[in-house]
Image (cartoon, rainbow, N blue to C red; front, side, top):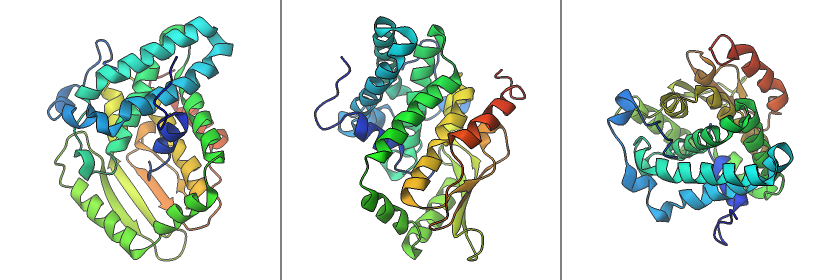
Length: 280
């Protein structure tokens, strides 16, 4: 039932999730406070952006993974609800600069998780269940990705041009033009334990999921960063995230370093923090 068009399916949807650094009209759930101040419905709802068919591809995979847990009828119904909710949410997503901001894609991904949470929590699934399904879908698709292309994309991130772009982007975020945006500092390493990094003091994903009532889903979005870094051989290490209540996200990249963090190392940390953050 959840077939997207022939050029956009689950594989493209999950590639969309793993491209970046990091990094439903939900009934009764809408942006609140400062996040409501600036919205860009025309950008997110523009059919040329293909956000809806991308999420339809994710829903295909989620529905298949749900069948053994809840049966085919409930799985199909939940997938329909998630897709419908995501579609309705597009016009109210917070504006963070649209196409001028490479992290805008992660606002869309935050909406994926919110839509899935609204559809799946009522049928007994947890935040960890939702996070694991998307993580496993992403991991499966990355195994089928062109390794040469992934490594080439990773290598480009360790160039003077890429560093200059990172500096410019971070300085732009510090102007705080958009309340729902990230705020970051770009760091260039000294050739020792990292080559470059980001310190985030504000996170658009955390803000959006908190506004939608699903803060417990934000840490699971973050786990996909390690999958991407492994595929691109960018050597990510991260010791803290805003999603888990710390004062920053500390991304540190080193070319060709082994990525040792993954679901098995990070999910227990999320469970351990859940009680402190009021999610248990």
